Every structure is written in C-alpha cells, then in structure tokens.
Length: 82
Image 1 (tube, rainbow, N blue to C red):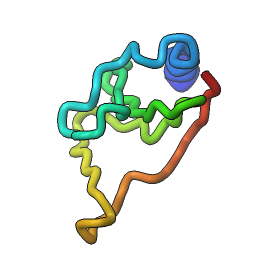
Image 2: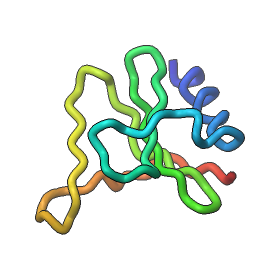
Image 3: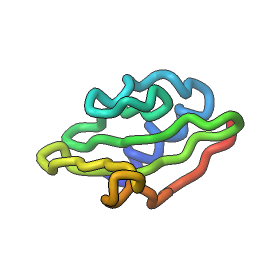
Image 4: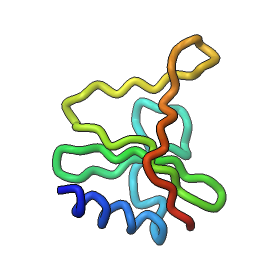
C-alpha cells in the first residue's frame, strides 16, 4: 500500500495539477489525490510540491488558520521538486 501511494505521489512532480482542489479549503494551491481509501493532500508551491498529509477518507480533516487561534496543518511529509 505504501509503495502504491509513493508511486502515485511521484506523478505529481510531472503533473502537479492532476488532483482536485480540496473542497473544504479556500486556498486554491491545496489539492488532493485519492488512492483507495486515502486522501493525499498537497500544496503546490512555485518550485516544488509539499505533501501535507495522507489521511484515511473516513477521518475528519480539520485545517484551520493560526490567525483564528487554532492549529494549522503543517506537517510536511514529502517535498517534490517540479
């Protein structure tokens, strides 16, 4: 399973916009791709892609701004050059 996820993620360096924007986010640079029951959420930067989180689809994803006094999704699992 992990190898399958890595293979899917490696395609992002060639096709960074292949995923859809995350519906519950206002930031258009945050996208997601799906692999089986997992959401792979990543952010498109100027010269690289940052994998933010890999989360099971049944989990509730909460991404909040520090400006509102809550936590922000900030664990960068992997950085891929474009």
